[in-house]
Amino acid sequence: MLSLSVVVIDDDASQRNILSGFLVKAGCSVISCENGTQCIDKVRKQYVDVVITDFRMPGMDGLEVLKKVKDINPEIQVILMTAYGTVEDAVEAMKNGAWDYLSKPVDLDELELKLKKVADHNSLVKENQLLKSQIKSESIITNFIYKSESIEEVLNLVARVSDSNASVLIQGESGTGKEMIAKAIHQASPRKDKPFVAVNCAAIPETLFESELFGHEKGAFTGAHQRTKGRFEIAEGGTIFLDEVADIPLQFQVKLLRVIQEREFQRLGSPQIIKSDIRILSATNKNMQKLVEEEMFRADLFFRLNVIPITIPPLRKRREDIPELVEYFIKKHSRINRRDVSAISTEGLDVLLKYDYPGNVRELENIIERAVILARNQVITRDDLPIFSAVSSSLTLNESMPARVEHLEKILIAEAMQNAHGVQTKAAELLGISERVLRYKLGKYEIS
Ligand SMILES: Nc1ncnc2c1ncn2[C@@H]1O[C@H](COP(=O)(O)OP(=O)(O)OP(=O)(O)O)[C@@H](O)[C@H]1O
Ligand SMILES: [Mg+2]
Picture 1 (cartoon, rainbow, N blue to C red):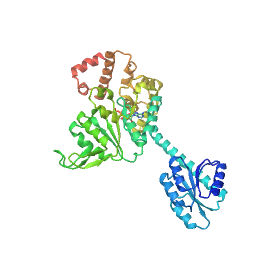
Picture 2: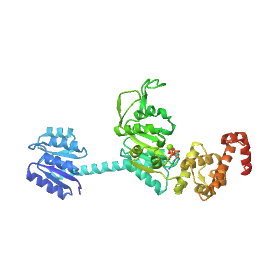
Picture 3: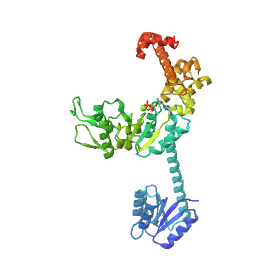
Picture 4: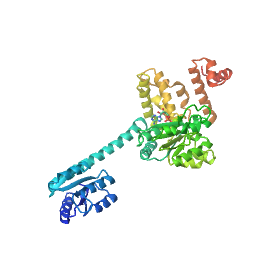
């Protein structure tokens, strides 16, 4: 069965009927037209796989039909029917992108064979498109490790918004993977071969925002020795990632809003208006709604940036991701540090599963990196997570605040002592406390 949608054009009614009847029997859905204009009308309005058209007709001829159809949708295949002997017509048609031609009177078996080829071709094209979209989402999934449904949902959303140009605001605590998600959106978007430019808004001094983002001309301000491109110009055609977006100074927010709305900007000190085609992604670990309510962030800019909100939950709310992340990071850091560590003991993993990770995935990765380096053999044990395991099991949200502060303090002091190789002066310096206070706390927590 040929399940194709076919338009048949012939000014000769009996020819049309023979063809249509045959095609319907072969399983096609058929629209029959007596001239090219009718056909173009249909093609504009509904989905069509193939157009079979007579070459010589009053009004629009076959070649014109071919060109118009291809203009509307190049994926529609056109087969021309030529009277016996007009080879030049056929050649001309093929040059203009016709799929094939048939000589009149039409051999119906031959027609069926040619349509079968179109059907095969179309299913191949579809398969390819599917494969491509799978590769796209796989590349996100292979480096974004997860098991939880909440992250699955985040990645589904990523896949759905990637194709569009909509601004996305990614919210989540520090170390949850906001930048990874931003890169994944860019990679899966049609802009993937253009630049991805990340701007850390918290790191730019207030006075330099405009020149950093939009660039400046030579002499635009003291110290502007040469014309410099801003991040927007560098990112042209691609994606700009405004990281720590909550830290954009209020006075600059209005300028950014205007650029987003008008899709054009000027270098500082230049009258030239530069058109800009850029996708804007942003991220923050702050509560933006609250900042808007407190008038620390402009509501209008917030709405522009937050067309699609994506929230990444903290690691402690998706503990089921921990084992996979641990396994992934063990492999990664064994490889990087040329160690032979390949697993973690059940007790070790237990400790990691109970911890709350204020620094989220980044903190977990640091813990594993350290354990891989310190591990005494191929399997990381609880003892390879020393400072951590001593206190982490009681470091849960059930504890009172002062108790948790004490635990954290103990971890930090022990860590500083380790980093300072037991030299108290140095450890006190690392912690930013006096040596006298350090000695007192060492005694209190019984750290040697
Ligand atoms: N699901 C994950 N799979 C693998 N690695 C991850 C995952 N989530 C985060 N990471 C790793 O954790 C670290 C922090 O990720 P990222 O920089 O994207 O977080 P962030 O939310 O932007 O953090 P911050 O708020 O501190 O800027 C990176 O090294 C990243 O590779
Ligand atoms: Mg980040």
